[in-house]
Length: 197
Image (cartoon, rainbow, N blue to C red):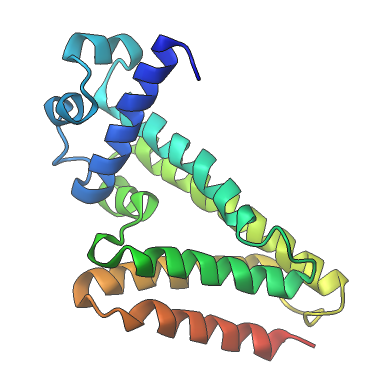
């Protein structure tokens, strides 16, 4: 249990994460964040000087939660390729389970604000870089264990995986087709199978 100030700050960030993920940056107002969090406007500005600063904090907070979550999806597995498969299954399953609410805060912020707000773009990029590094390391482990072809470009493959998952989220938003995530999962498994030794 944190201090009263830490609890208040967490309430603000949690409300911001939810609203930003579903509504985007432009449509989310400080008033809505205050209402959602139960924190008065003056108190909110005690913790965050601006909406931008709060949005960056919300994105960074989400990064600090997502990366450990990704690791938790594969913690009991030793085989590096199977670990990657478990992570992909877990991530795609996570979004599939959210149905019509499937949405990625990082992708949303990059799409909406990437060309107009450097601070928000950089915050989203920090997540994607952390995720790419995680995947790259896993692919390198698989190569070292002789499970993946030596010529495999781990960095390029990491970016392909991220692009496929983020693309599936976008396609699902437009189509509402629950099969979108399963199809993406099957395609990624086929890619990995083609690169395995």
